[in-house]
Figure (cartoon, one colour):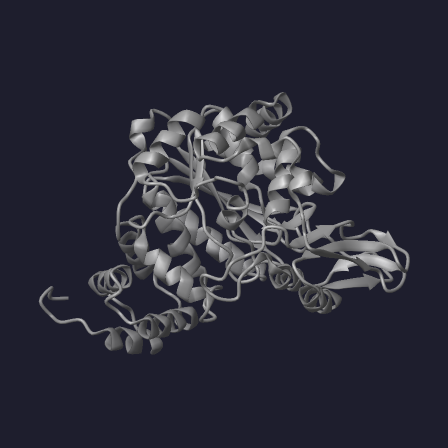
Amino acid sequence: MNSHTPIHMIDLILRKRDGGELSADEIQFLVSGAANQSIDDSQLAAWLMATWIRGLSAAELNALTTAMRYSGETFDSSYLGKTTVDKHSSGGVGDKTSFLVAPIVAAAGIAVPMISGRALGHTGGTLDKLETIPGYKTHLSLAEFERVLKIAGCSIVGQTTNLVPADRVLYSLRDHTGTVESPYLICASIMSKKLAAGLNALVLDVKTGTGAFLRDQNDAVLLANLMVQTGEAAGTHTAAILTSMDEPLGRFSGNWIEVWECVDILQGHAHPMSADLIELTHILAGWMIYLGGKAANANEGRVISEGLLESGAAYDRFLKMMDAHGADVRVFIDPASQHQPTVTRIFKAAHDGYFHCANCTDAGWAVQRLGAGRSHVGEPVSAHAGLEMHVKAGALLKEGDAICTLYADNESQLHQAEKILRRAFALTEKMPYRHPLIREVISRGR
């Protein structure tokens, strides 16, 4: 395209609506307009929906990711003097592995610059969880980000005003226009932020199952391949782990209560309901340690991860990160005492049967209705709202046995959530089938 030819947003919308392909220049125009807010939200929303329906070609996806990556500042990780590796999850219910893998991998001698987001749809947001920690600063300048990484080896932050600003606009619009689940938009959003952080390697936790954005495993495989190809093309060693999201991960789903669960694990006080969370943590950390050059393979990386957690080295890193971010680390002496919901209710089995999470997405929406998530941009979330699971899929229950405990700020929230959970949870006569935690690994090696 001639660089002097005027570009009109309506033309881009119509062409994508009709299945056409946009040029790199046109995508750059769109991304720049999103970043500087010169393009109206209604037009961006229309393009997002057209993209959700029509998808993107490989060239379009590469152009979109690249344009978003460079839509603002980028982080130069070379000043850290360490290999930089990050982990990203495509989103799930009770998914809190970031609080565990970041300090574990940092303790292995690898820098972990982690840029995270807020609640999106039925899934929780890492930043919302961190902001329940008194004093923790989720937004740092790039200079402050570098300082924390040098002190602690890991840092979990939100996007700065100038880091991938186009994604911040498009991410928010996707949540409210029914365009969250596009593998192309998910790939561009995730990879633009991760590549802007100057990573040497990246491990992706791609969820599939009833609680994932991409329920169909074929869709999840498509997303995983798109992200691995995008990362490798940019010079970042990338591996994708397809993991099951068919029931809430671990013991808690919410905000502070998820932090509490992870602190318990780091302190060596793991609850039996956290076993699946710990298993997934070591698998992800093992791959990060391997791609970071500290292990000969992912299995050896897992062994190193287990040792760093057991020795307390990971917890030391966690406390250093918290302190460097301004958090009051005294709250971790007794994290359970910080959990103060206004109202609670035990959700019980209506009859005998094997417990089955029939729809994990509904379980996520129940957590959101309890106050742990948001219905619109800027809405506050409750620190103490959420769900505590007492059983895992396959547990044989009697009528009246506790399935979970609901936490909220008022009774009406409990009623809304309980109604949703009656759809989400089921009791069956036969033992339900359980997918393996790890369904597939997609990697080109190191």
